[in-house]
Each structure stands twice: as C-alpha cells, then as structure tokens.
Length: 186
Image (cartoon, rainbow, N blue to C red; front, side, top):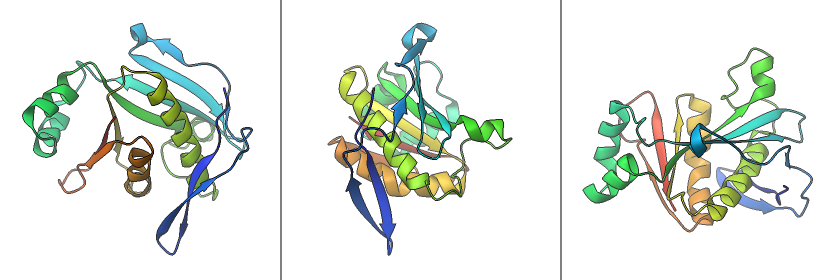
C-alpha cells in the first residue's frame, strides 16, 4: 500500500500545503493488522529518515476514562453528539509512534529534532485519510497529547486534516488539563 505525500511546511507561521506525486516516500510494510476483534488496528510504515513507525487506530467504546468524559462533555454539543462520540461504537483514538526512537530509549511520541517531523506527520495524514475513507465505521477520530511538541503539531496540523476530510474539528485546548484532546467528526 502506498500513498501520495501530503505534508505541511511552516513559513513565517503560515501553513502551506505541499503535494508530491512520489508514492515511494511512505512504505506501509504490511496491511492493517486487526487485534481485539478488530477494535485495535495497526499498520507499520517506514519513513524517509529510515525510522519505523506504527499507526494505531483503537476503538474507544467501553474504555473512556472519566476525565475524558468530563472534558468532552464540556466541549461536545449537543448532548446527543457527546453520547454518540463517547458511548458509541464509531469513535477511534489515533496514535502514531516512532518505534526506532523507542529502540533508542526515547518515548516514541515526541517530535524528533531531525527536521523531518512535519513531513512525517503529513505522511501520517495520508494514511489516516485513506483509512477513514475506506472504513465507514469510523465516524469520529480522536487524538490526545501530553508533550508540548505534539500539542503544537496537532494544533497546527489537525485543522488541516479535518479540512481534507471535509469534517468538523474540535479541541479541548481551552480546558486546563495536562492532556489535550482533539476530535475530528467525519
């Protein structure tokens, strides 16, 4: 499975979309692997910088912590939409992890200082767009971040992802909490 590259570049605090036709930049090394009866889906891919990543979709039904419930109830309106997102079967938490960084003793969730983070995040966008467009069971995707670098990346990049998916974007950035949540309703 290959994807065209979609990535963003920051120039003077403006985000510009950049498209390339090279499908060789992102190499999914397997098809989506399904675990836990399909509630956990994982794809491995290699990035141009040589690092290996995992892109993870996890269905959150029945696993939503009370803190997220309380925060989401403040920002997701109306109540019926909140119940659909938090209690429904079609909300998926999305994460991507640099497995090479983990092998080097790093967390795998921080933004690397390699200069490739924006390009890699853009390539992850492609995989997310493809996954959402190919799976009608995905109605909401959710991201979370604790690290400042990831919060900044999500704040800049996820509104663009929502736009590409013709979807609504919502964040909990205005609610004080160490962990921030970001929702895209597809």
